[in-house]
Image 1 (cartoon, helix red, strand yellow):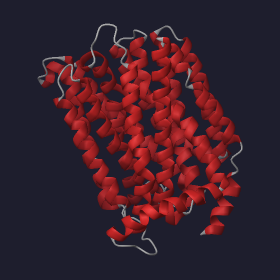
Image 2 (cartoon, rainbow, N blue to C red):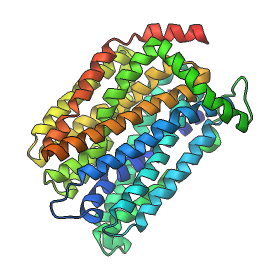
Image 3 (cartoon, rainbow, N blue to C red):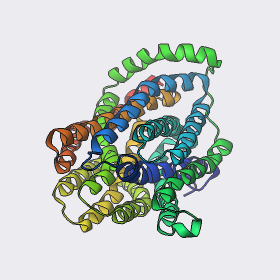
Amino acid sequence: MKHLFNKRTLSWAMYDWANSAYATIVMAVFFQLLFSDYWFHEPGGNSTTPLGIANAVGSLVVVILAPILGAIADRGGLKKHFLFFFTIVGVLFTCALYFVHAGEWMLALTIFVLGGIGFSGANVFYDAMLVDVTTEDKFDIVSSAGYGLGYLGGGLALVFSILFYAKKEWFGFTSGEQAQLASFILTGIWWALFSLPLLFAVKETRTRHKEPIAKAISHGFMQIKQTFREIRNLKVVFLFLAAYWLYIDGVDTIMRMAADYGKRLGFDDNDLIMALLITQFVGFPAAIIYGKLGEKFGTKPALLVAVAVYIGVTVYGYAMDEVRDFYILAITVGLVQGGIQSLSRSMYARIIPKNKSAEFFGFYNMLGKLAAVLGPLLMAIVSHMTGSARLSILSVIILFVIGGVLLLFVNEEEGHRMVRELE
């Protein structure tokens, strides 16, 4: 337990607590609800299409930036600098959503995309700092602890947002929309405040040949081609990234589009919020337990089980008719969502060169966000072509199936050996 309860690992994991307020309040709940009912309120309007396109555009920007910034950060020892730059961007644009008026859906989407770039960009460098805070044999449990604290922190932040909404008169709000908008201010403050432990208590591992910023930028751009060649030659890394790209796409798409999907099935806002809150609090212990299961039975088997569960979730989501089904899905997702995210991160950390962690995690997050382009866009296209929310969610199943099949062929031991030979 000393690997979890020390200043470095806890301070690092607290960033998950901090930014998960954005993932829950903005990404998973209130932005989707406000977009449907407040900003894009049109009789018979299809909010899934513009929301899916906006998610895809924001992810595409991170796809382009992540590997370049990762290479620069490694050469200049700048992981923390970039992490907090993107955090500030995310915090400011999240707070800015409070000032968007009814009907201004294009402005709302623009600010949402910019805030999402801050969130996703910061995660590139947060993930890469896993190698700075613990030893390789504890990657699974420390990574899982981060996601576990993220679920707890995001859940508590969501509780406060629900109080704003349910007891708006206590806080002087005149409408439910105003209370929901105020939750974006809460998110920004929460995110900024709980990022401070990482800023002050975690030191980035010194690079062997730290370069001045200008030189690091110049060399960072040149490094991209070399890194891509290395990944292509490290066949285990390449295969894992291909698998990860597909199955994490499904995970991210379900998280981003679940509330909008529930709205289109006619479920009440309160039920959607409570179901997603359940996911958060189930996810807290489940993520940590999943980390221990990964240590005991192997990371890849645990990941394959999670992929299989998501296939079942997708099929069940297609067929559900009652709000209790949404609650069942929320509990099921909570049991595996943190596990599939945390063990993917720790498995990847084992099969990459440690002195190039930001660079390689730049590609990792690039594929994660490229996946987030494909999934929402796939739902948007299917929804537009068929007019069916059910078929749009069912289309996601192909991502889990192909991703799971590719993961079967990933040999973690071989990857670990090849990387040790390069270091």
